[in-house]
Image (tube, rainbow, N blue to C red; front, top):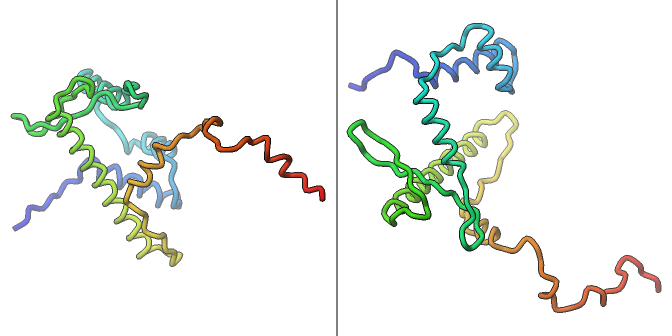
Amino acid sequence: MPKTRSRQTKQERLQALVHEYMIEHNVEVVNMNDVAAWAVEQGRYTRQPKSMQQLAKEEITRALRAERHIDPQGRVVRTMHPVKIEGEQGKLWEWVDIRTAPPNKMQAAFANRRQSIVADVLRHKDDVDSYNDNNNYSAEIPLFDYDFNKDVEESALPVEYDDALLDFDLGDLGDLGNDEE
């Protein structure tokens, strides 16, 4: 027999809080600044302060996710990558520097990141399909093309053009805006 939960998770409580705000204020669109102010003022949101170690871990993790460097080919790339490992306490993450990490660590990091991208795409498709099936406007949002190869190829194209590569002199075109005949 499946185990049932009687207690809401923190995430479910926060989601319910937003929906209560929407009902109480009779709105369909919410601004998180307004919701947060209302929740705190009403005493609906309280929490224990985090430990200094937990705050440090979260801030350091955010900093590592944001760290970039320019590689020898001029690309801006992420420097530090998380690698999921199984430890005595369950799932843990260790971080490796792309410039020095062994291939097995980077393969694992890239595989984890790809799985995250796939999960985002699947959630996106479900969201679009659900909107199309259930919106009040009978609107149909076309399904997106999830083949990102064209986007990757396009991103490699130059954004500035070298005039020396042109086969003709722009001065030979004359005044295109002046048709005096």
